[in-house]
Image (tube, rainbow, N blue to C red):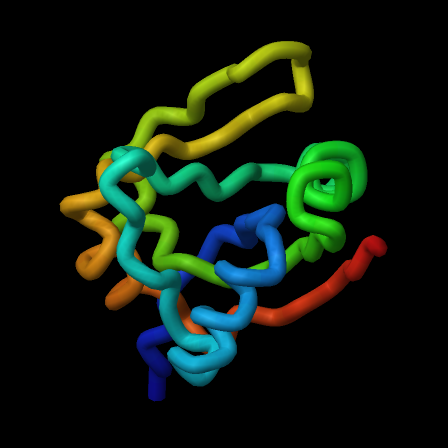
Length: 118
């Protein structure tokens, strides 16, 4: 008997305290809607890049930075080409804000907090 298991891709998201509180309110299962000045949701493809943003940018601007890790259905993610936002390891997905609900529906399991910086 074959079990139908989805293949997932691990993504990371550097975030500040306000967004993290909203994720907690959503029971660690979804990302909150974007604000009007945030037309794109940017999950990143590697932990090191997420750590650098949380530690070097979020702490400076928000007093704390956090790195989360989560799994998303790989087949669904194929619609978002990988964007190289700088160096070789600075890789992101650009999810339009209006597609975030559908993106959230393809998260497998819970969003995990993996690093915290103050």
